[in-house]
Image 1 (cartoon, rainbow, N blue to C red):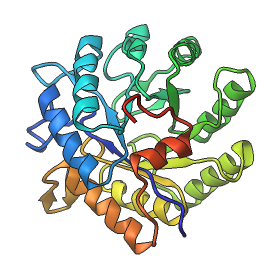
Image 2 (image 1 turned 180 degrees about the horizontal axis):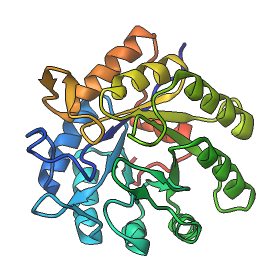
Image 3 (image 1 turned 30 degrees about the vertical axis):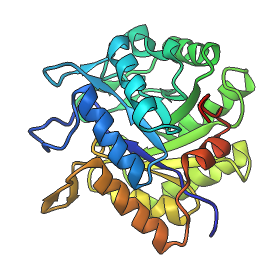
Image 4 (image 1 turned 30 degrees about the horizontal axis):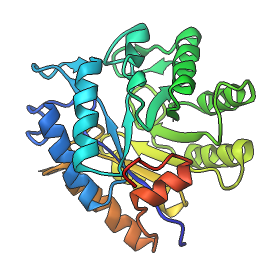
Amino acid sequence: MTNPCIICVAITGSLPTKANNPAVPITVSEQVESTHEAFEAGAAIVHAHVRNDDQTPSSDPERFARLKEGLEKYCPGMIIQFSTGGRSGAGQARGGMLPLKPDMASLSVGSNNFPTRVYENPPDLVDWLASEMLTYEVKPEIEAFDLSHILKAKEMLDKGQLTGTPYVQFVMGVKNAMPADRDVFDYYVHTVHRLFGKDAPWCAAGIGANQIVLNEWAIAAGGHARTGLEDNVRLDRDRLAASNAALVCRAVEICETHERPVATWAEARQMLGLRMPAAA
């Protein structure tokens, strides 16, 4: 298998704190440093949240702006993907950073259960976020917590709410949502290819101990992989991950096992139909 594998590093998220793992980057400077290490290790995409000084989640556009500036300076060419997830804010505040024109942003197109609550993505908010992404030329990453979310992405594509080939990420292993089930995973891959074409790119993310499982499945099946401290703060049951870069290195090793080259940032941009940065 020779198609390059895009590695996405989810550096912080909304939940992990330094009490869970001291390596979780919270401040903008910590996030930039951690991302730079992961970039050097092989990550082509950074999936980013921002936090308040007390480590609580935030959707503050000013913090996103400072993070974007630092990432562009120290990780030139890396694909910057901002989260519009619901743990960081409510309503349209979730998309308040989209005018900053990151390369990509996550887009959850339907609701589902989370460990202690419902992850609400009402249709009017989904439509608004998609519209903002079109306006500011931000490519969505469709977060598929359920099969219906992949089918919703096809409906949105047919209605012109999405352009180009959608990039779908399967999220598996969230408690009360879709578990890491191999038959379901295989059907997700089949569904993406049926709806969007046999060459449509896709990614997979596993939560907690499922991270390495989904890395293995995705890389072996020709997809792309997400890793990082947002989803999993451990290397294994007995060891905390020393950094985001350590988790990226593990994904790189899996790529080597399956004889897949790791995509450079330029290759990743080409595969996803993204513009090249001005400096390039």
